[in-house]
Image 1 (cartoon, rainbow, N blue to C red):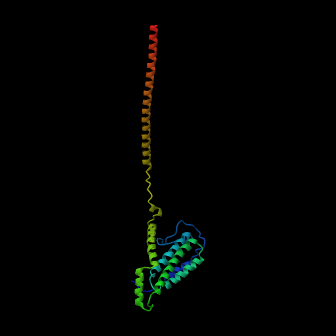
Image 2 (cartoon, rainbow, N blue to C red):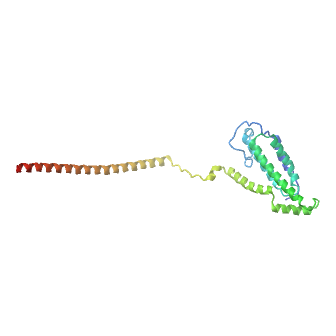
Image 3 (cartoon, rainbow, N blue to C red):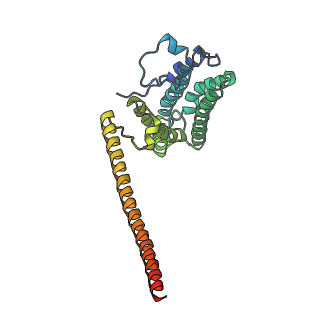
Length: 245
């Protein structure tokens, strides 16, 4: 059931900025932020970690964007977003953490951009706010046309859902690179493969030695035969020379 009633949820979201000291040095360090979309409970130790504040900033960013994008096309968006804009500016004035300021500043710029867009569209309207039928038609046309915040939210939502699915399934970002899988053999299989490999290696060396040995013996017999033939020829020549003399 949908009703045309405004619920000031952004005010409640903004109170978190006043309850947590983001400038305070964390008691413990952690590897990555806490994703509140997949976490149901935090321990006291988690509340002292840097990951808690990192995750809290992401949660404030998500909730503020989720809430205000539903009002991004209404004629009163500049007034609806004003409390959130003032809270974000106050946070940027007090916060000294560069990463947190960068995230909140991006959100602030998106809200201000959409407010300026709606303001420019209102200035071109030829009806008053008391004309409810004309306001409804104007908002319907703006919604169909789209606003900067609605466009940004659609893109952000796709990336955010993909990130949450990866965290729920327990997969790491490196899995997207599709590294080749290394298949490790069992100890028994590895030993058998090593034995077979060394056996083939020794057999190959033995065959090579036999071929080399047979070739060397053949060469030696050829040399012996040549020397013996020369020796016998010399003896025969000496014998013939004595008989002639």
